[in-house]
Image (cartoon, rainbow, N blue to C red; front, side):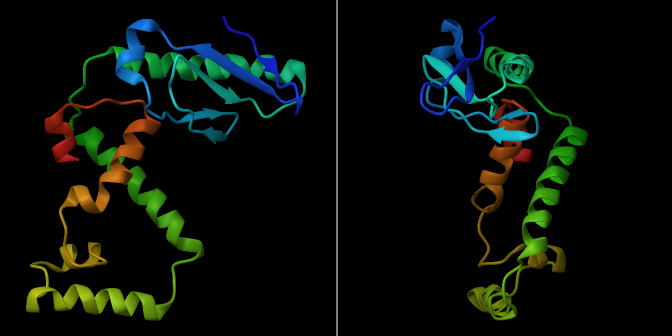
Length: 174
């Protein structure tokens, strides 16, 4: 198992691991989300992958290295498996996570009433007719676009956070 190493300038311990050769071709250049001791890191995969353990204490670094190791094992497993098909329940659960993250982001600083009024006006003016349903209208902040354009980055983030690679049918449904 790789050990933590001390950064020569800062003294903070890092965890570095070699990317398995069978996965390197598929995963190279992609970013993954790793959560170590509640801190989120987003390292990019190359020949090696490394993440700060955020501590100068050697005992704490060893404990956190085990946590990093298990996170990377999940990442390697997700790249080595074929894309999975999620059930509707799993898709809805991921959508709930996206909703909660989005809601949390807007809770503290939702923006000014003027900005929201302008967005609403643009939405209602779209081609001279409003979107077909009140629910659809409530979800659109700018003129209607495809769901992928509107929510794709959020969906991608949820999949990366759970180290999931999904098939095309599942991605279209989410």
